[in-house]
Image 1 (cartoon, one colour):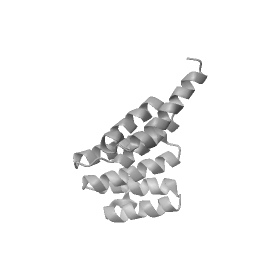
Image 2: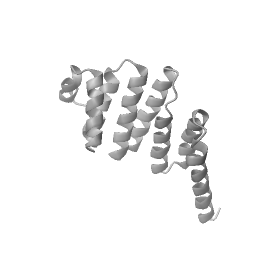
Image 3: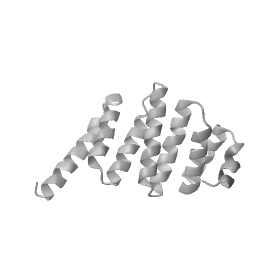
Length: 143
């Protein structure tokens, strides 16, 4: 980013930046939401709060169509949570969704299996439907 944008947020408290991100997300101002969440993640020292900010940033980037940027932030969110001994199942599900949108069904499945280890209900709600869809697509390709 440019120095102008970063100095706007430099003095702000991470909690304020997170609230700003949430507000902008609610208004579907995705670019501004991503900026606020990114600034929050950069300023935040608590891993679980940082993970929440990264998750928000990832969702906002996905909405903007920046799938690689979204995936990077969601992976960081998962790592930040793990360092605090918490499983960020929501970020894993978001990552699966981003990968699927990006045409990476195998990557999506990998993220879902990670989520399933912490939340067994993921199997029925997400994994089985994706398995059925992948099987159908294989068949329609004549494999």
